[in-house]
Length: 310
Ligand SMILES: [Zn+2]
Ligand SMILES: [Zn+2]
Image (cartoon, rainbow, N blue to C red; front, top):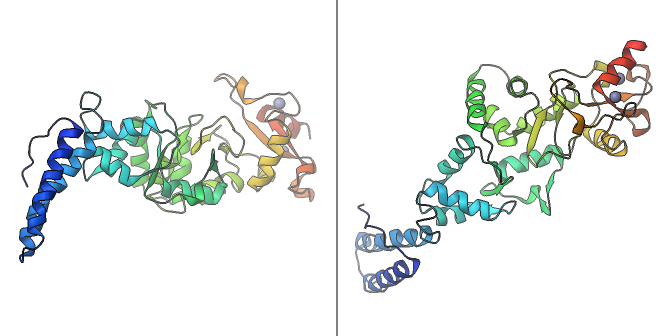
């Protein structure tokens, strides 16, 4: 259906829309259904123009820019997809969201992904309980653009296509991004959008000993929805299978610092890459429990030393 040229201001479009709706009043009594539908089409177009005119043309002329401006105005606020439909004025706005993530590096999380994360991680965004989010809702997690994102999404795309299991895909992707935070959206994508992705990430951490940190499991400095593989190594076999709840409690108790040398993540630098691990005081193999009393926080250097001495 041909579109009329856009009128400029919301006031003008509103007047035009009202006129169209008034005209439609005579059509309601029409017998022919198609006549009525065709008479209503211009009003639909006009309503859509009204939505997209709410952000002035000079600020954002493309639908994608309007969506971004809207999200940037309300960071960390739950935004319903219908709002993005209104402000973008286009039907295919979900594609624009994907572009903003993958080509422009904006951390826009969807309700689906955050819910799946919350199931594994009981995470919370400020006052928002992530379990209550609906799939068609969105949140801009960070008002900073991540300029490396486009490259990462290309890597993600290659791994996604490889013929290995979900867990293998996730760890492969993380190992290509050691020390660099990636979003839950990326991990979900690598995992072929399978709901199990969040559980697999937890298994990689708690069963296989990969140091994949989140804000709730060792790195409170990370943003919500971010994951980072801190170092490309698995913790010693006997220090695996520590549940996240114990990990969280011990790290908090020890102030996120090594209980031997005092190292914290603030001191991290590329020539001395370390991270914090949990060590069983009485070894797991000798019946040591995963209790807070039997666990202490060590940096990887001190942890290696302790085991070397024994
Ligand atoms: Zn240390
Ligand atoms: Zn140990």
